Image 1 (tube, one colour):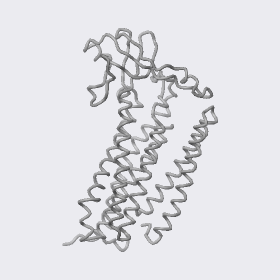
Image 2 (cartoon, helix red, strand yellow):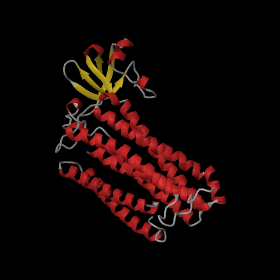
Image 3 (cartoon, one colour):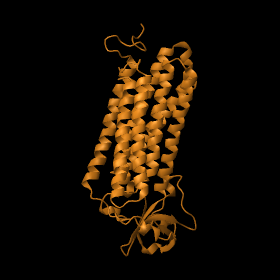
Image 4 (cartoon, helix red, strand yellow):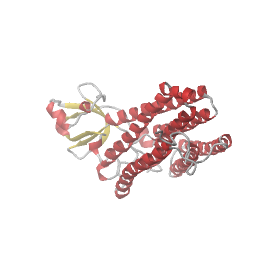
Length: 284
Length: 68
């Protein structure tokens, strides 16, 4: 027995099976991201604004790179335009144009992931240093003459690791002070980017900007990594349809066009999540 | 809801985001920010206008496709 409405729309609803399926799936995704968004917003509104660099007293506002986040937003909006153009090209019977638009979408998807990886790397190599005399700094660390890079979590330093590996002294380049409202960037201009030697015995806490450092980083990495995973899976599916999967166009163009519409719906959902994520995480 | 309808919803959200970003940059400028903040506010506003123009073009181009 043949399953009905696999690609022809059901006359009374105007929908084919896959479209019902993807909307049910997206409804479950809305619940997943909705729970995380609610958690983020509740944590954010209940915490006072952190007094940088004393992040523990409140919410560490302003630690994310807004120009990079804006660039990634533009990249994702562009990818939504190209994916819808790919679908429209199939509707008009233009398979070559479809493939061109899909390649552009893939470039946007992997561009987004590349920029996000850079942002993650920046955070994993950025440290909060707390001294026994009460001073707190954020900045970059140098251990045994090397700036620690990030390839795995084993590369991250903390006070326990300094003690274990018998590192007596580290070099620390503190971030410039953040200008207060009305001060423009005068405080930043007078700051010298000079590494200062700090003895291990003077340190009371050393922690990178990783999830365990602060609630902000925990939820930031959880939401953005989950979103990034969705971007990656979406890109893999689109790559399949742009190349080997496009053979279906020759045998059943209507079903192939429907599949691209379903992929496009998923991709729009992923982009829409980012449209909400960007102002909440970067600007709020 | 078809991809066409979802794309329109997405564009509406993107236009809203660009307006929010423009307002955010402008409020930074007003609170003692630099000229750069004012420029970014203008760029975000221009992007919102660009997205409105694109939405009109998109709806015109795909007028024969259903919203369902």
